Structures are given as structure tokens and as C-alpha cells.
Amino acid sequence: YARYKVPPHLGNRLCGRSVRRRGGYAGKQLRYLKVIRKKCDEINALVNKMIVLTKSEYELSGGNESILPDEEIKNFIAENGEEYSNKGLQIDFSGEQAPQIKISSAYFARLLSNIADNSLKYKKGAQGRLQIELRRSNEKTLLSFADGGQGVADEDLPHLFEAFYRADRARTSTQSGNGLGLAIVKKIITAAGGEVSACNNEHGGLTVLAVF
Image (cartoon, rainbow, N blue to C red; front, side, top):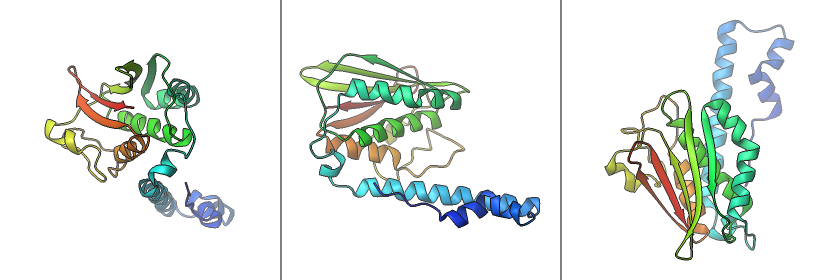
């Protein structure tokens, strides 16, 4: 999908490189530039998320592309697990081999990262955990994501996958968000012919279940 980036000359100014070459601004002005850069990054991320929501089911499914979910999950953890752990989220995986899913590898990775980001945002304490489980049942592939975070109010559960919906009454957070992460998760899963739901865990936290 397309990415929209801050022009290099403007990015350099916002990062402070051009500023320093020209003798430097006062501390307050440099802080303002850093705030502007952060807002530009947030807008860039929002635009890219909205682009995903406009994709057709054919584009999201990767056309004729198929993936083995267990291999993709292991690759995702190998590539990103340490970074999430450093931020305070331990990602674990258990399960069995499952048939191929007709979905783009890139968008399956987006699905995983969106759920991991959601668990990271709403974790409890300094270190949270996301348990990914893959299994087969009645000729269906079940992929579950269980975290130990704050959970959501029961009345919010049916709306979690709606665009721009934020269940902040239950999952309070000081971090910003736009309510698109789980909407994209649903879009990707349904494009692959699956269904998605969410429920609160008995001992706290949220489970997202995808069925293919």
C-alpha cells in the first residue's frame, strides 16, 4: 500500500539537523519542531490505515497468494518479538500446523502487528503478555490472541471492530489512538473468508478469535 512521507527537506528541519547546521534554535523552538514531527508521523500512520480500509477484498487477500499461518506467526515473532518485549509486551505462540489461508503475507503481518499493538497499548503494569494460539476444530482453523490487559466493558464488545470506535471507558490509556487498528483486523480477516469476534477473559484481559 502507498505510504505518504514528510518531504526530506522538511523532515531534516523537523529532526533538527538543518536547525543545528544553521546555528541552532532556542530549546523551546526545538521542542515545538519535535511536536510537529510527531504529529506528522501520526497523520502519516492514520492515512496509511485509512488506505487499508479502502482496499478491496481481492487486494487484501493477495489475489492468488496463500500463507501457512504457523510459519507466518513464527516469522513475525522472530522479526518483531524482541522489539515488543523491549516495549513491555511478551509475545508467545503455541499450536499446530494448519492448512493454508488465502491471504497476503504482508496483510497477515499487518493483522498480527495491529493486535500486538493493541495489547501493548492496554497492558497492565510494566510487562504484558500476548498469547497466540493456532488450532484446528471441525475442519476450521482457529487463531486466538489472548492478552492480560484491561479488557473492555461488555457493552463495548460488539463495537470493537467498528472504524473509529474506541472503548476507552474500559481500556483507559494515556496513549493516543484512532480506533482503526481492530477495524483493519476485521477487514483483513473477512477478506480472507474468515470471521472475527472478541470476548473478555475470565481472569482479565481480552481475547480476539479469528476463524477461517
